[in-house]
Amino acid sequence: MLLLSVFAVGLIISTPTGSTAYSAAAGASIVHPNVPAIVIAPICPHSLSFRPIIVPAGVEVKVTRELFLISAVIN
Image 1 (cartoon, rainbow, N blue to C red):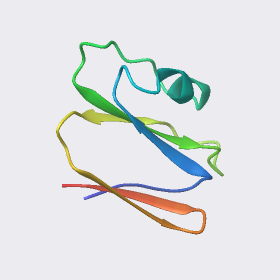
Image 2: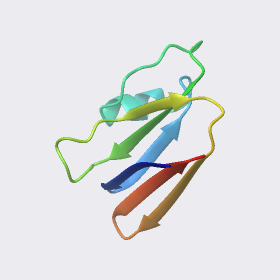
Image 3: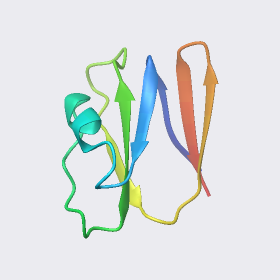
Image 4: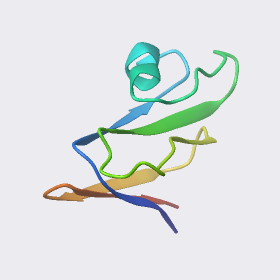
């Protein structure tokens, strides 16, 4: 299932305790350390309407990139 497709410079994929400052700087929410989740936030998206996504921990996320088009797929 396609989760996102966005034109951006990069993508931050982190746990609630990892890369919190980077995710917050990219506009993502700060997630409590006890919440089993993964935060996906684009770096400098070329869209004002894109928002970071929080998915359940344990899902497999596959990221592909073609120039500045970044796509993420979950299984």
